[in-house]
Length: 111
Length: 112
Image 1 (spheres, chains in turn yellow, purple):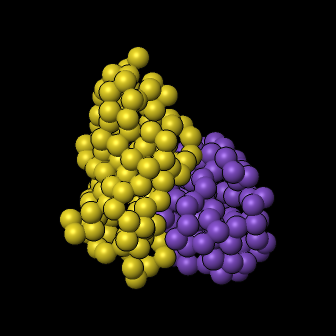
Image 2: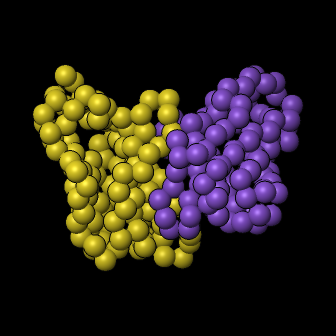
């Protein structure tokens, strides 16, 4: 099945540094979404980018989408210890109304 | 968690027993979903509902059934639990199929 694949699987950085996570997918999509999951909790929606958009910002988050390469990136600027979590991309293909989630990137931000 | 509750939050059961997990929402959202989350697999869709009594299968539906008799409740049933169904189960809701989804706190199920 079509699935987003995040890269890297795990990322460790110091507070104040930027964190970049990438997502690749296989088929043409309507939207791509990013979610965050803190340990032991449910996922929380961060941002949605449509297939006709190339970049979107929300606070310290910046998401880009390159439909020609079937890839997206999530940039967290000036990271904080509270950003420690797993981050997932999710895509919905043109011919389905279901979201397919990737396996996630585990981000660790050290104080 | 956006008006979504799941019950129970934790359950330990034995192989072969029936198990029902409940998802309850107070947001009046049309779509409701059941996912399971396992290490190395991310989140996988089990079943979803697009209205009262309207349900469809997801990626990993074998061994699971669902029911939605009211807008606010979506039940997931394991007719005869197996050890491979040990997992964390998440319910989610959304206004539309392509909108953002809001997740419940999860149910940790252990099948011995």
